[in-house]
Image (cartoon, rainbow, N blue to C red; front, side, top):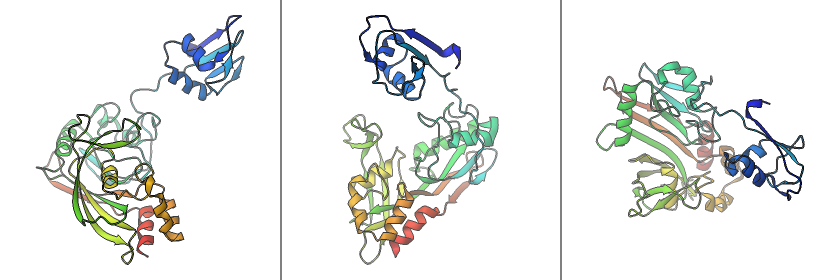
Length: 332
């Protein structure tokens, strides 16, 4: 243990038995109770020399408590060598075909193993300071369990040029972003637009919710969709849908499609009410859906103007194997 971060106390005689986390909250008042509870569960606290993992453990008079506070995680992400599917790269930018399961940038619970960590190792110092310490070069993002195309800037010029295009969302410029999704049911209108403001849910901070336009928390959001194919064609239970973003909000496609009654297959957050639909699938289809183990969403097309040359670049990503397997089983 590092003595520089080790704190020790012995409770006075006559101290009434109390929860360990409450006792520590008084003794180490510079740390929040939630932080202390996390440290306890991580095995950073001992009582009478033995690790205690339960924040509710009662401790009383004479108990010897030791708290180890690990050194803070460096603010700047560290490079980590990973295999990247690089679609295009030059001195200004790099286009990645991101697999499902890869987090884009470091955040709580994902301080390492992210795309940013891989890009720092691949690109070296060229990413330093571009777009912020935690998100160097990132001008847009994909959810952890969404696969597909993503462009990253490698210098300030590229970052500014790409950021302006993504801020405009293709309304007046050349930006093109198309997604392929599998949704439950068949939308009544085969082609349509969902226009509904989005904000962080006040009941569940992990979710995004539809809010009224008058609600100042909400951010304007528009998704255009087109049904490409009902699945299966004879008695459809799902649809292959193409979605085009006019704005780029967190979870936008997932929330908007759920809002019109057609959530994405495999979406445990916004499609949980459709679990019984899976009972209508054949055993092979159910197995393919379980194997997918994520929302059925893929960023299939990305087009933008090169920030230095002005050339229009357009890239297409084939549907990944897990999503392709589910698609083929639904067609059967």
